Structure formats: C-alpha cells, structure tokens
Amino acid sequence: LENVSDSLSKWALQGCRCVWFKVNIKDAFCVPILAQKGFNFHHARDDFVMMYKWLPGDSMPNLPPSCHTNLGVGAMVFNDTGHLLAVSEKHYEYPHWKLPGGYVEKGEDIIDAAVREVKEETGVDARFESLVTFRHTHNMMFENSDIYVILMMKAITDKITPSQREVNLCKWMKVEEYTNHPHVHKFNRFLVHTALEYKKRNLKLDIKKRKVQWATHVRDMNFLVVEDCQ
Image (cartoon, rainbow, N blue to C red; front, side, top):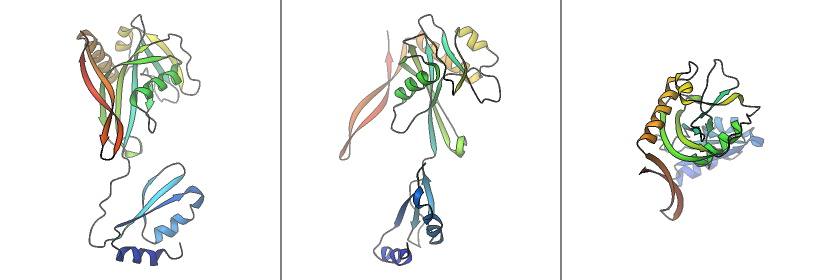
C-alpha cells in the first residue's frame, strides 16, 4: 500500500474510472490506510469488506449499490386433515403464532428455502403446492427493503419435532382456530384466507425453473406460472 497514491494517479491517466480493493479480515489494518486515500465502503461479508475509489473528478460514481433487499419465505403447511402448522418462536417480546419460515440463503431457491425452514423449525417434511403472495416493504432490518414470499405446502409427515434453538411452541391448528386466534397477526389471517380462496377456485401459482440463455451464459431462472387445476 506504500505506492497507492502513485498507482491511483497512473490508473487515472490510463482512463480507469474505479478502483476496487477487497480487504480480507486478516488484512483489516489496511482499511484505515485506504480510507485516508479516499476509498469508501461498498459492502461487506463475514470475512471481508469491499472498498472503492471513484477516480474521475468531473463525475459522480456510477456504481450499482450494495445489496439493499432481504428475501424471506413463509410456509403455510396443511396436513391431510386440513390443519395448519403454526409456530411460536423464542426471543419474541410478545405472544404470537406465526408461519414457519426464515431468510433465503445465498444461492438457494425459494421453494428449497421453504422446505428447509419447515424441516429445521418443526421437523415436518413438506412439499411445495402453490405460491400464495409476497409482501414488499422498506426500512426493515439494517434499513434494507424486505421481500417476504409465502408458499402453500403439503405436509408429507405429521410428527412435530420443534427446534430447540428457534422454536418455543409448535402445533397443528384448525384453520378456524388460527384465523380467530388473538395472537395471530391480521396479515397472517389474510394470507390463510387468500390461500383457501385459491383452493376454492382451483388456482395454483406455480414456480417453474427454466434454463435461459443470458448473453454468453446459460442460467437457471424461476418463473411464476398461473395454472387452473380443474
């Protein structure tokens, strides 16, 4: 880093617009040095921080922002008797009954995330049936926007084995009990009523994965498809 200033001048003359430094946590001593040279933070992970310096003095940085939206999934799981799987999580400040779910991990598909979260939190195996809806809101955790996708799922197993780390209580509830329970949020009641309306109308919002040619690469992409189940 001793020659950073000289390198920055050289890169500017060569027409370079932006310089990036990925600083590993073991090299964290470099961060204040780069900051003194005019580098800013762009994003960070558990083991590194990405810093940048915009070189043109006559223009503002034209860079994509760091990730600003979290993606979560909720699972509305019904068993063969029409009961709904409900959980009460630990570390909540108020009594509640909610749907199992959580954040989608990096590189994970929404359906796979829902299957994983249901299994981790309740011990129940479930398969995807339909997308119900999604909620998009702002200024949530870390001041990020937040997308919450709700899936309707079918239980493959009934036995509940609640997570000792995450779940306080877990049980199968009658739909009428859940939608009228004082500890169920009105948004969750709306979700259940919406899912039941889909069932009544034999509608399914399916998620299909397709391979799509994207420039020089082939990518797996998920698409929403409306199907009539009649």
